[in-house]
Length: 263
Length: 156
Image (cartoon, rainbow over all chains, first blue to last red; front, side):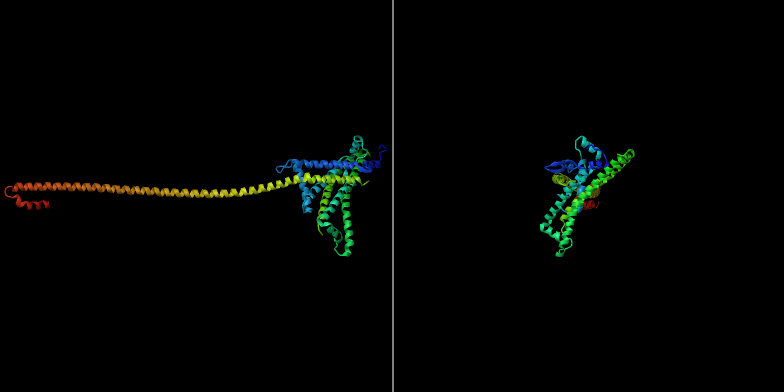
C-alpha cells in the first residue's frame, strides 16, 4: 500500500476492512476484535460494580453503574410492562455495547491507521465496528430472532400464525393475503431499519471525518479549517453516538414488547 | 463489503454478552438497588413512627405532670386542713383543761371557806355558850336549858 496517495485511495484505504480467511470464509478481523474487546471491557466494568454491590451506601463506581442500570430499566419499563429479567439486561447490553462501539469514531482515523500499519502490521483497520453492516445486522437479526421466539412463546405457534393471517385488517378469508403481505413487510422492515439506521449514521460520521481529514491535507488553510471543523463534528458526534445507541436500545425493547402483545 | 462470518461471530458475541449481563451484572445490581430502596422506605417509615411516638410521649408526660401537680395540690390542701384541725383541737383541749383547773380551784376555795365558816360558827357558839354559862352559872340548869342552847347554836 505504498502507491500514490490520492483522495480516492485515501478514502478507499480507510473504508477497507482487514479480512482474514477463516476456513475459506472471509471474516473482518478488525470488527470482530474491536467488538469483542469493547464488549469485554464494558461488561468487566459493570461486573466490577456488581461484584462489590452493596445495599448500603454505594461507592462512586457502583452509583454510576446503578444510574445507568436504572436509566435503562426506566426506559424499558415504559415500553415493556412485564418481567424485565431478560429484557432489562438485553437492553443494557445493547445500549452499552453499541455506545462503546460507536465511541470508537472519536479515535483519530489517521493516527489509528498509522498505529495499526506500523506497530501491528495490519494493512487496514477500521476501528468502528458499528460502521460495519455485519455488526448492525448481527444485532438486528439477533433481536429479530428473539422477537420471533417471544411471539411464538407467548402466543403459541398457532396463535402466531393466526396473527400473521388475521391481523391487522381482520379475520375475513378475503383479507388473509393482505394481512400476510402487510406482516411480511413489517417483519422485513423491522431488522432492516433497525440495523441500517445505526450503520448509516456511523458510516456517515466516519466519512465526514475522512473528508475533513482530506481537506486538512490540502494546505495550511485546509489544515486550520479541517482541524476546526473536525473538532466541531466530533463534539456534535457525541450526541449522535449516544442518541443512536439509545435509539437502538429503545427499538430493541419495543420490538420485544410488541412480540408480547396480542392482537 | 461482505456479509457473512463476521455477522455470525458478532451475533455469537452479542448473545454471550447478553447472557453474561443477565447472569452476572443485572441481578446483583438490581438486587442491591431494590434492597436499598426497601431499606430507605423502611427508614422513612420508622422515622415517621418515631416522630408520632415522640409526640405521644410528650403528650403523655404532660398529662402525668398535670396529674402530679394536682395531687400535690390536694396533699397540701389536706395538710393545711389537718394542721388547722390540730390547732383547733389543741385550743379546745387547753380551754377544757383551764376550765377544769379553774373549777377545781373554785371548789377548793369554797370548801376552805365553808370549813372556815364552820369552825368559826363552832367557836362563836362555844364562846356564846361559854359566855352564857358564865352569866348564868349560878341560876341556869344546864340540863334544863340544853334544848334552848342547841336551838341557839343552829340559828347562828
